[in-house]
Length: 114
Length: 111
Image (cartoon, rainbow over all chains, first blue to last red; front, side, top):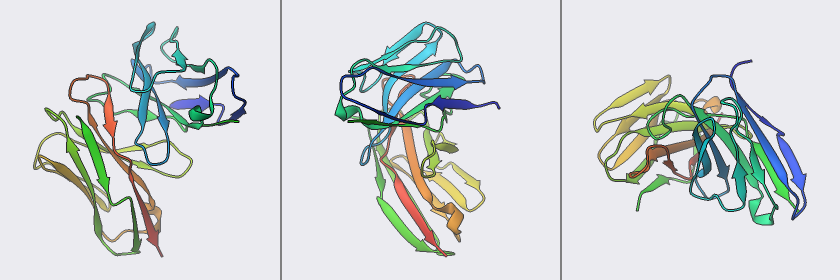
């Protein structure tokens, strides 16, 4: 089906482990985004990508790494997970620049770091 | 500092009881305001984009309006299926890609 998918949907890991969250979109959108959502906060941008091989930091990038070798995929890696990274992570994509174009969101990954 | 504030945090209504949600913002050079709906366990779903003061958009029981300092999401004769968290966002003043998001209003419609 066309759209934006994330995997896994749920993940439990331990402090210090490396975790990779996957995001795949079938629209060939240029822009892709990673957000985290925590109670009491709005969505906060972690990283974004304007095209394959072009990525940049958002508001809260520390402890995260991204790559984008193909337009359709945008994985997010937590190199050494910490409890403060327990959150719900959303991937989004937009046809043009996310600042003025509609962003379409995946279903989210709920990550728990013990 | 660019900021988006939504109120109230939560709103409980009876089915059919109309009300409004507020999104106030401070950003230099507004380039649009987005409304999204988020159901539990799901990602945000796009509802509306408003670009200039005085603009209005409607979808079923929802109508969004925009002034120079705030936006309202009016809900007319809501049904239980309108229960969700409603989010608003504006483009960050000095960025072409980043949105500033409000914390959302959780709307509960009781049958």
